[in-house]
Image (cartoon, rainbow, N blue to C red; front, side, top):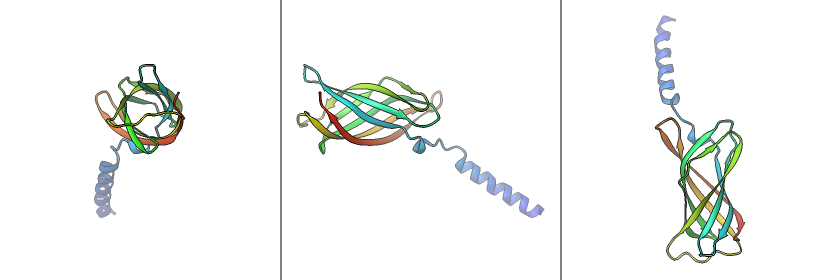
Length: 142
């Protein structure tokens, strides 16, 4: 019995070392969807992004970058530089101006979209991690 104790304790320590410190960022379930696209009088396009947190833990999004593809064509990038707190099981809305890519066509009417998002999450006081998610759907350009 004494001969098994030390190897068993060592094995348990190795397992704890490799599994005990993971942050679980790949399992948090945050979602970002395009809620609205609005064309302003000067031609700029504002996007409303809906951040959803279905989990039981709160999250802090330091900033986020979103690549927007409309009707199968990349049209630009949305940057949200304002920190966003997401309490457990809630949603929050953020607005960003579309930075159009060169050669992107006009966006009008009802369009299908794909949104690829990279969120910079605050884990501890000075530690951040990146979390990626994507969504797709349709939206009417107003």
